[in-house]
Image 1 (tube, helix red, strand yellow):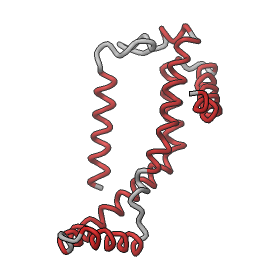
Image 2 (cartoon, helix red, strand yellow):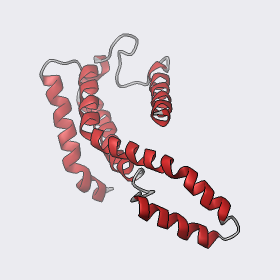
Image 3 (cartoon, rainbow, N blue to C red):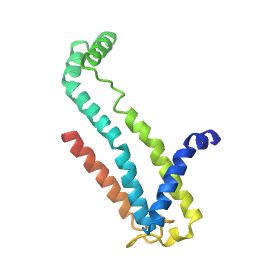
Image 4 (cartoon, rainbow, N blue to C red):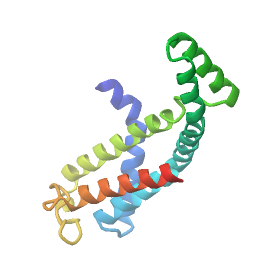
Amino acid sequence: MELLSKIFGPLTLLISDVLESFHSWGAPWWLSIVLLTMLVRAVLFPLTIRQVKNMRAMQELKPEMDSIKAKYKNDRRKQEETTMELYKERRVNPLAGFLPMLAQVPVFITMYQVIRNHEETFPSFASGGLLWFTDLTRADPYLILPVLSASILVAAGKISSRN
């Protein structure tokens, strides 16, 4: 745990400073969190683009990969060799879609930890919410935010897979 705090310490300080800056500029806590999230998403957007491009490249290879599987269905080794040749020929890395997502995970976990730590440090977090969600130290009482977040995630996934 100590090793992780040393590794992610600078990131934690940066995210914390940005969150506190937004609040010190006059934004309420809920808006500071929204602005921080938008800023982080904007910074990570190039990784998202890379991930989507690789997913599309893999989708374009799917018909050829299916024909390789059908052609060599009894020879697993030949199937893998031909698939690897196809990847090399088209310059596609099957892990390239996963790596950008893996790079984003520590950032969002750190954001979560920073916000959880701020609720202990700043008592105003308890009254820094909006509308029905006034207390940022408690879970959403009506589960509107988790359902909304999951719905947006599913919709975004469907739209990106279609386009």
